[in-house]
Length: 77
Image (cartoon, rainbow, N blue to C red; front, side):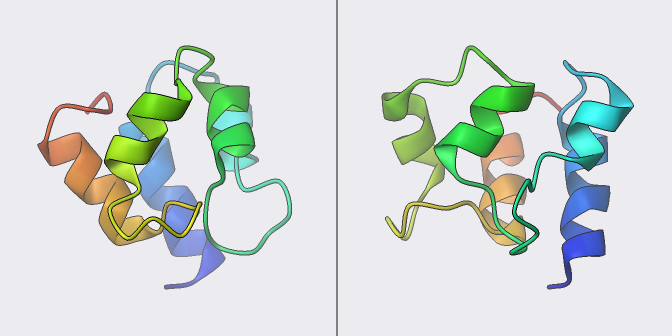
């Protein structure tokens, strides 16, 4: 998945921050979101809630995990 597609998904999913903050959530441009990047746009995310969303336990959320978190109600839709 490309960085732009992930940003598009996040713009749709992360309604709690400004559009600019969501667009820039992937601070290092690697196409996935770390807990630090998530907390920058959603400060209420805890290590525990991030771990629930990070289903493959690689320390980052890819677009599939973002979609799954939204479906599971772990992330705003």
